[in-house]
Image (cartoon, rainbow, N blue to C red; front, side, top):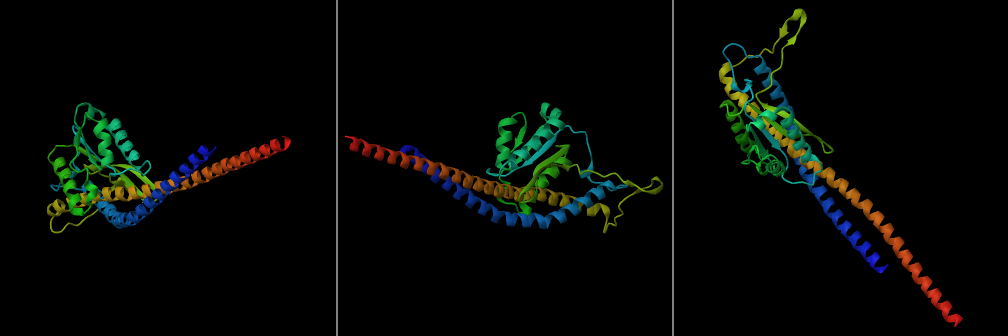
Length: 300
């Protein structure tokens, strides 16, 4: 019985130590989340409006004005960019993003993978570890695994610039991005977005079957403006993918550590009840032995 009590005491101490760690990790994630959430909430309206404008411009280009970023080609070679965190302990966050990328590959890029014409760029160690071991038949681009160490616009822009160059050069015919979209601390969604070519929207039919197009006035010239505007918008869009995932990671980790702290508290309550029951049984057993011994002495 003494050994059993000692074992329960050790388990209580172990759970209490784990609870202190999870509580500290929750507090750290909450502090990081505030900064990351502020960054994405400030940028998202701007990035979404720019992306809407980009889609409208590319959907309504006429005449000799054109841009290579909206040209849709037969997809002979594709690139999947998978954005995850570097560390775990954030629930199913990384798993859901990887699952979204895998589903996309199996449903739309199975032929390219079979032909050896599917490349995967991993941003974040979790994605890199998964695809390095499971997708050995694909070319893995590992130059930007540690991109989360510096999320400044200039640093991220070097990656998005490479992607745009590869697309315009014809190295890839389609580039897709898997990332985590942040909603709030408790909710994050795994998303799969096409980065290039930019999706076009169909003109909306109005009265008498006529179609309405967005009417933009370009100054100084349409060609000169598009050559600078479109790459800038695409860089902003790629930056949003990174900031969204960064905030989602800390939100998921804070939620996971909060749940782990609660579970540790529940486990400690159960262990204390078990300990008190065992202690009570030990005391009752000792009293019974004393009473029995006293009775035996009186009988003799």
